[in-house]
Length: 196
Figure (cartoon, rainbow, N blue to C red):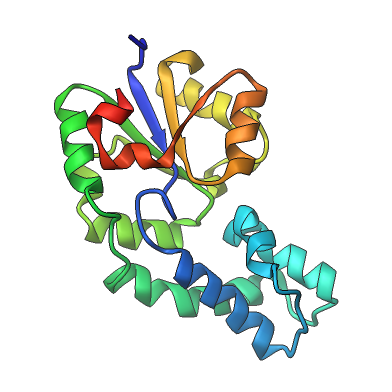
């Protein structure tokens, strides 16, 4: 049996169904500025999240807009959805309650900023389930850098090998595995048995 004491969950796409909103945010900004973008733009921007998508798009497409303005437009589209309608994935809340009941520390590390994380987190009642909800904006790096997982372990006061991580994107799974930290499938959020 694994000696796991903590879980570190991704938020968007793992705990909540928000990827449609993220896609709409990015495309809204690009369309507003008349950008001709490739068909795989969402695939490119998804791992960058709201933190790094503006810089990537502005540099790649030579857009005449600041990163702050790009984000502002994204948030104008996203925040109402996070405040009112983005649901938790099926069985997530029940599974988290059971893991918490069994004594595990539940934590979130997301590429989303607090402007979108916090409204959905609060509306869905996650505060009673999770010990921490971190955005990459709380760190000097992002989820493609293995150091962020070591930083979260330090903040938790836990050895990295005692933390299981649930992530829906292969890029981040590969990052964790590059430092010897295996990543469980994001489907773990649907059953307690899969998690433990």
